[in-house]
Image 1 (cartoon, rainbow, N blue to C red):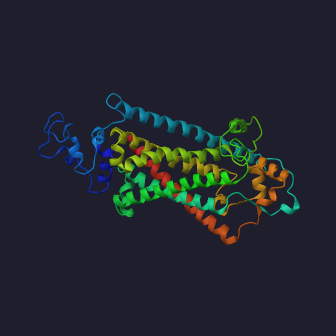
Image 2 (image 1 turned 30 degrees about the horizontal axis):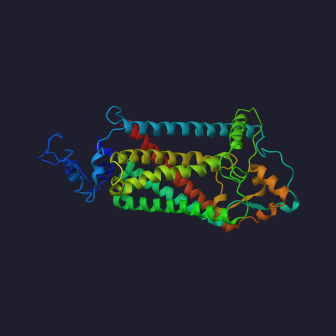
Amino acid sequence: TTYSQTYHGQVNKLGFAYTAKCFDCHGSHGIQRVADPASKVHPDNRLNTCRQCHRDASAGFVSFQPHGDPTDRKSYPVLWTTSVFMIALLAGVFTFFWSHMALWLYREHKERKARLARPHVVLDALPEEFKGKQFERFALPWRIAHLLLLLSVMTLVLTGTSVLFADTDWAPVVMENLGSPRVAALMHRTAASLFMALFLWHLVYLTIRMSRSGKPFEIFGPTSMVPNLQDLKDIAAMFKWFFGQGPRPVFDRWTYWEKFDYWAVFWGVGVIGGSGLVLWFPTLTASFLPGWVFNVATIFHGEEAILAAVFLFTVHFFNNHFRPDKFPLDVVMFTGRVPLEEFRREHTLEYNRLAASGELRNYLVDAPSKPLTLGSRILGFTLIGIGLVLLVLVVTGWFGSLMH
């Protein structure tokens, strides 16, 4: 039923008794047709019915569509359009990036078989003084922020999809171990608040740094995260390499897939964060927006969360850990450092620029200690394992929902 697809229906299925049931809105023995003035859901009575639970509900609540069906184009055109847009977005993103993954894996496998892959860029020997050194890519604050961001996202995925896919066999088990839907909601909102705090900290930090640097910021420069024409050229060159029509391209500080990961967070904050705030503060939202916005926000929140989770645990994991050059784990986001030889292969243009300017020495550090390396590997494998478990849960829930 459409009720079971609403938040009320989902948490009810997970055992939470203190949520709206059918009889809370429609009544029990005195149920009347919607058109009957005596009906609790008659347009003239609906606001008072909503106020049984949402005491400060405004007139906007009345236009909420509790039985809205996004597959019914005729009755709910806005919901249908929203759903089709999100499905097209998921299909487009996964078609491109999963194809990118498969082709990359194929090309690296073929070159390794022919003993051509390492090094994939022809380089002169490192200067003697640089041997054994590593390049510091990420300072401690960025590594801490990345870890907190990762933990918040994993918490959001676990608590959110357990409700979204309440029909699955695993959702009640997860919810029981978390405590209850109320506890899961608290965890979800806490993780969301941490995510938003990290995002805002990042924006403030960038603003302060750019204002104090004393150097002009090149928005399309080689160290900028802003996509530029070179990224399009790199994508074209990468696909030529995939099909054996050209050499493997060399990159600057940020590759095009790293930039995509970066800007995906901004998209996620806008879509998932924005829709989440709408659902978190319904009374405030309905005071200036119509109630059907809740229906649209629910679609955006759920579908975009699926996109983010599956992308992170497939594409992001592959690009950073599972491709042959990195497999089985890259610990740079935990140690902050990468062997200089690897840095020169992966970011040849930045290496050449820093070496030519004499700035390379400023980034050279010793290899991380054995305890730090071991701890980073244990943490990395643990998080990857958790991510893959979450991926299985999301995918089984997703396909299960498609079957209904």
